[in-house]
Length: 328
Ligand SMILES: Cc1ncc(COP(=O)(O)O)c(C=O)c1O
Image (tube, rainbow, N blue to C red; front, side):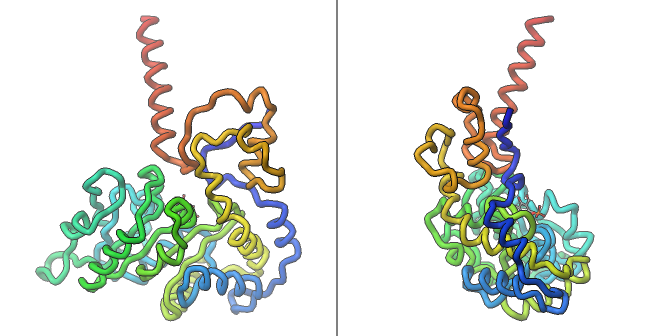
C-alpha cells in the first residue's frame, strides 16, 4: 500500500535530477567561500530575487534568526503577527540569540495578513526611554499557521514604505514565497523587493532535501555569514546540497500551481507524463487506482498546519465525541 503523505511540504523527496546533480556536484570548502556550487546557488538566488547577495543556510529557522540578530539589538522589539513562525516555532530564539522581545499583533481581519494599521498600534518609535523600542517588523508570506494566506505585493510595499519611514527594518519569512508568488501571479522578486531581508526555503515545496537562503544587501550577507558560523552553520563541502537547491530553483517553481490546484486528484493528472510530476504528485500516481479514487479529505493546500487540515481534524473529533455520547 502506498500512503500519500500530506502532513507537510517538508516531506518531499529529491527528484532524480536533484540526486544526479548531488552526485556530480563540484565541491570545495564553503567556510573558505571556495565551494563553486554553493557560490553558484547564492548568485542564482540573488539574481532571481534581485537582491545584492544571498547566503546558503542549513535551515529556514537559522536564516530567520540571523536576520533578527542583524536587525535588532538586545532589548528591542520585533513586531510580528501572533501566529508567525519566527515567534511560535523557532524555540524562542529571538530571545535566546538576539535578546529581542516579540511584540505579537493580531491581523484585524483574522487572516493572519497584517495591515499597516495592525502594526502601527504596536510600534514604539521615538517614545519614552523606558519603553523598549521597536527594531524590526517581521512578515510571513505565505503565512503558514494562518493557513497559507497571502500578502499581496501592494500590501508588502505599503508596510515596508511606512516601516522604513519610521526607521524600521522589515524581514520577510518567505519560507514559501515561491508558493505565494505562484498563487498571486507575481515574481518572487516583486514580493521581496521592498523588504530589507528575505529568507526562503529550498527544502519545502521546492523539493530540495536541505537548505534555505537568506538574502539582502552585500553588507548584510557578509555579516550574516559570520553569524552563520557562530551558530554552527558553517558547512564544508556543502555543494552536494546546493546542487539539489540549484535544480529545485529551476524545476520546481513552475510546478507549484499543480500543488495549489484545489482537491487535485490522481485521476485528474493522468494526462500528464510521469516525468512531469513533482515528487509528491508521483506518490499520488503510485497509489493503486481503487484507493486513489476514494474520496479523501478536501485539503486546499499542503501547508502543515493549514486550516483545512484543522477543519478535518475537528470534524473527526466531533464524530468521535458524538459516537462516545451515543454509547453512554
Ligand atoms: C513559515 C516558516 N518559516 C520558517 C520555517 C523554518 O524552516 P526550517 O524547518 O528549515 O527551520 C518554517 C518551517 O516549517 C516555516 O513554515
